[in-house]
Amino acid sequence: MVEAILPGTYITVRDEGLISAGQVVSGNIGIVGTAAKGPVDEVQILGSFSEAKAIFGEIDPARQLTLIQALEQIYNNGGKTVYAVRTAAKAAKATYKIKDSSDKDLVTLEAKTPGNWGNDIKIKITDADSPANSKKVELTYQNTKETYTISKSGDLEQQVNNQTKGSTLVTATLAKGSSSDTLPKNTSESGEELAAGSDGEPAKEYKNSLAQLENELINLVLLAGQDVTNPEMVTALLGHLNTTATIKRERIGIIGSGTPDDVDTIAGHPLDSDRLILVAPGLQISPQVKLSGAYTAAAVAGLLASLPVQASPTNKPLTIPGLAKEFSTSQLEKLVGKRVLAIEKREGFRVVKGITTATNSAWHQITTRRIVDFAIYGVRSACDPYIGKLNNERVRGAMKATLDAFLTRMVQNEALISYELAVTANRVQEIAGEAIVTMTLRPTFSIDFIKVTMYLG
Image (cartoon, rainbow, N blue to C red; front, side, top):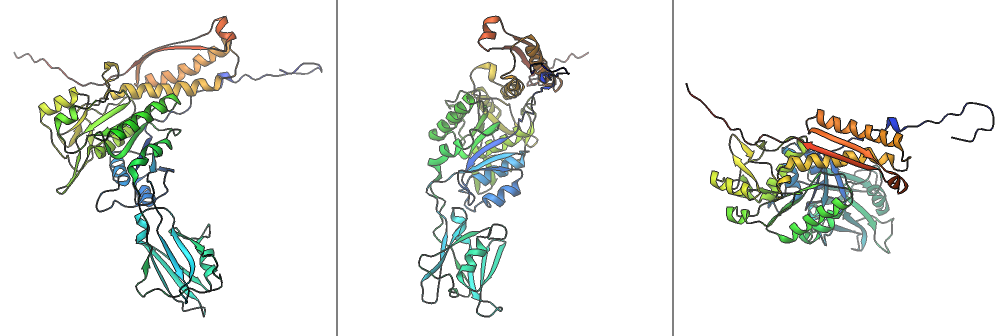
């Protein structure tokens, strides 16, 4: 309060009683993979599969590109918000050099993003009907067609690079020493294609691309198309999970089994983490096409993202075309005993048991990890606004009320059975600027077994 010198009414407003925990997200997915097009090492926030295809292109016939295939499984199983990063090393943009009548370079067209996709962009240059002494330049890629009428090569650069009405396919640059007043020569009647676009060598760059997701608010993360048989990828994913846990961006990683789906090989995995889920088997897309468990992991990620944190994926159906291998009951028992989230064919395709790879029994169930992470984010958002405020009984009481409101909502939503909470500070802690929050959370568990005893009379 300001010093009272002149007579009057002086008012101090204390806002601690209005502080509440912010909204906590629980279903955001982060994914890194290879794609036909799109910016490299840039986070793209997606809300639908159609949006993903517009940015990253279609599924390639050879199914070598991983990102769009994994995104298809995510959205088929209920995923909503996805933070996607295209990874590629030494990727190159497709180009085409427009020449004048003397075969000198006039304008260089370059695909907007690296990748083989740019090699499918076709250019056709013909004489325009009007005005006189002008050219018509047509660019086509799949269902996209762009037409530019120019009276000089400088017009093409200006129109293609226009920020509002320019090309969505290419950029244009005048060649050094060329005249912007010169018209280009015509192409062949059927047109010509851009060339030299390349997808690069993606596998080496997954770790760098994962780093782009470190500061994003995501809850589930996976490497598209990468499975547990690749130790470099497992190390990269575990390193990412450890790094994000230390910077207040906790998340769960999901990885799949390799090919072929050998039970002993899968069960022999060395993974042991409450933040990592191993999924098996792979997918059967068609009689000729089988995919590794990495894509089943994407389907599980979509399923988890669609569920509240307290809902177990156990016995939940997956929307997938088929399994690369159908395990027997004894094989499923072995996999579950070895901490593998297995999928079985039973009234569709279902998750056998929603478990992590942790050997610590406290973290076996995925729901426990998700509930605690949800509580961590909520408690952090409730406490952060109090940083810098007075460390006295009144403010600590307000902080406790804020935390009470958040935890009570978790009880009402059945994420917690109950909780105990205390916010304290002795004089030494007050001097040190410390407020001590102590809470005991009792998470809700799912029904995994129903034991029935029948008496006949």
